[in-house]
Amino acid sequence: MKRRALGALGVFLAGAMLLAGCGKSGSTSSNSGAKDAKKFPEQTKMTTAKSGGSITVAEETDTPFTGIFLDELADSQIDSDVSQFGAESLFATDDQYKINNKGSATFKLDRKAKTVTIEVKKGVKWSDGKQVTAKDVEYAYEIIANKDSGSSRYTNSIANIVGIAAYHAGKAKTISGIDMPDGANGRKVVIHFLTMKPGMTQSGNGYFWESAAPYHYLKDVPFSKLKSSDKVRKNPLYYGPFKVQKIVRGQSVTWVRNPYYWRGTPKLKKITISVISENTASQSIKSKKFDVINVVNSQWKEVKGTKGYNFVAQIPLSYSYLGFKVGKWDKKTGSVKMNKNSKMNNRSLRQAMAYAMNVDEVENHYTQGLSFRVKTLVPEGFGDFYNSKLAGFPKNLKKANALLDKAGYKKKKGETYRRDPNGKKLTIHLAAMSGAPNQEAIVQNYIQQWKKVGLHVTLTTGRLIEFNSFYDKVENDDPSVDVFEAVWSLSSEPSQNDLYSAKAPFNFTRFESAENTKMLKEMDSQKAFNHAYRVKVFHKWQAYMQKEAYVVPLTNSYSITAVNSKLVNYSLKPSHSGLVWYQVGYKK
Image 1 (tube, helix red, strand yellow):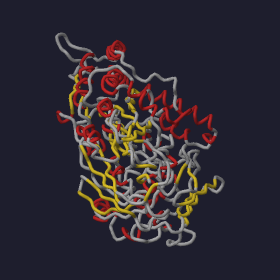
Image 2 (cartoon, rainbow, N blue to C red):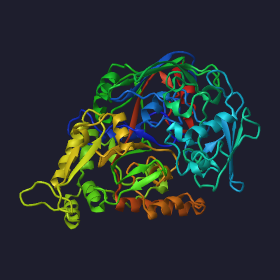
Image 3 (spheres, one colour):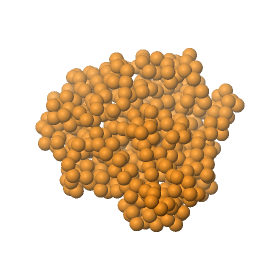
Image 4 (tube, rainbow, N blue to C red):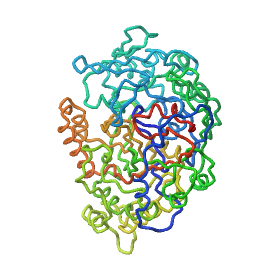
């Protein structure tokens, strides 16, 4: 994520801008941008800041934010960005995302008893002055698991909590596996699990939620009305360092100090985050319009010499990918329903499309090495879980043609495009997001690459699709989408269950197989408490996913942020995630 660590919240739907691979740039094969980014620290100077002052923050996107100010219901990267100043995880972590007790709640795991005990610290209060209680922690699970709320956070992973499946199915009025030993108004919660999982000490593991929801404030709102409620959209409560003062719908949010913040008084008095077009990002940096603003990678040459900013950088846990639709989501069963006869359910076709793409050339052309092709669905940032032996899909038109020929995708004499193995004309509809300035050129380039191997690919709707409309089509399995190019912002625990299991709503391609299910279970099994075994399963799974190519990883990139040089204590380090907006301020 650009500014807010994702560990506590799991996966987010991200826009094309997150990887910032496209923009106004001349042709270059230089990797000078990457060399620059490697030199940048992950934080500005860490020192004593003075109290007071206001800052402006840019949110670069071509779409208004939806404004769902409740973590249990928010899916988009953009909503998470604009809420980061008030939203805070229950748990703090170290720089390897391991949960510690320095946050707003303590954490204790008992593997033998199959429990996790969460205790909110005394004095952790909502922005209306009410103590965060055990019921607030438990209520977040009710929102996630109640079908009426429309949350996409209910997954196989969270279903590992005792009794939550019965609640989700409407067979129980409460979640039996969540105890409040000191009562609803106490601060302690004990969560009982069916089985314990190896990633449970890591933030973002998906097996328990890491936030709370204000029950006293929202209890009168029916679950079905939560997402549209003014209490969520206009007047949300948070227990983080800042509270909402003003929302200009879809455009900006002004945050002021939460007077009840448990750590003390934040240094800054006010923060305003505003949506801007990425077309204007470089000019906004050069004119110093914002105090904190992300660099569009393809515009790096234009802004790199700008004075008055310190640049910080990291490679986020993110990737863009190509997904092939092979089924639909079955709401009745809460799982994917694969269609073995679907247009894209041919491994050779999927692999051929991947090999036809010239991802390396595109990234070299536009980003000076700041964006780069990734080879597997597990980012290198996950250390030894990453399978470095895999090559991914480098451009290979010869291999793409051979795959299609062998699979029976033939051209008739005089025709430009191949037909399917049954001899019928084949048109593949691609959904891609609008966003970065040259996104259209990039997508048209790939369409031409596919034409080179005889595949007729056209854009769904005939044009690039705005962020919210794009994900609406993808999530709802719109029949006009055969293939889509999307982006993940990942959680900080590498388990793949919440993305690619049969019961994961985020499994947007809607594929499933016995082999995939088996490996996903193995990577989070009791055996996987043995690190070497878990690494072995991850490597095997990545190789399997490359072979099947239902989801093809494309790119990741350096994320560079320009920070007003008068500001101190801005950090991208995971250990500072809950602290960053509390500690950022102007230097004395």
